[in-house]
Length: 323
Image 1 (cartoon, helix red, strand yellow):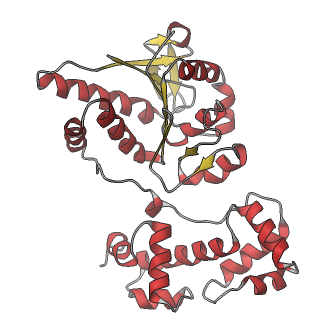
Image 2 (tube, one colour):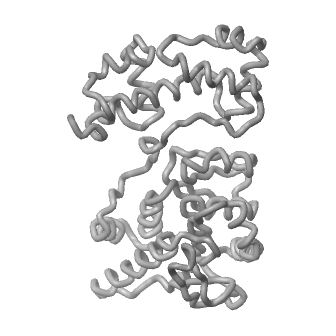
Image 3 (cartoon, rainbow, N blue to C red):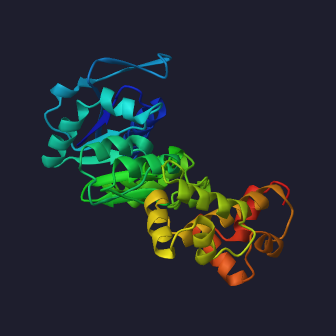
């Protein structure tokens, strides 16, 4: 029997607490209906017995208090709502327990922005991690020692798992079902919950708005110039002259401020504009390509797929209801 501890912190998202319980309870039922034994013992674990969530709209009753769990096999850290720094401070007493359990052999899973609490333990240092794309800039600022990969839905490293944003954690739940049971059970579970078992990227959902949570005014000027002139072919030398910076200084400061190279930023701004056009107009792929400053069809398609995980054709067909 594998012991699962689903943490119930203050400010947690109710769905990210109950969905793992629902999935693994269902797996137990599916196994039992096939004449096999249940394999998961699932408990809600909190710092107190009753935890009020979502402005006290819901109360979750913990099965066990943290101090009463000397050992577990799998820990789930749910997503949080509201200010993440405040949530981490309110739930700091979970941190040493998570570290202790990991050292005893437990595996640890974070769902969506639960990655912030997992990173706070230090267990993610030097490892890859995913989280909700909207929280990427804040995460990088708070945890520079963690390699954030926002395009990924699932990461796994030495018994530590993270998931992408929002409902993408359902794919991590399926991944764990398969790991602890078998492929057949995972496929059946995916069908019961109507989950696409092959989804492995959240790139198509990312909305690029530019990283402006920095204080380098020269780089903000460069960002504004790119965003106002994305239809043109912008060179780094042109941008250097616009900002009165040497090319070397511009590239160094730009990367430090935005976590993107200048070229990456230009590409992302152009592709975000292309995405919007595909979503809202009936323009064909060639017209959109020219609109955002590309003249090479192969290059445009390659960069679009690299950033979104989809071809321009597939993206347009999926998101434009007029097509």
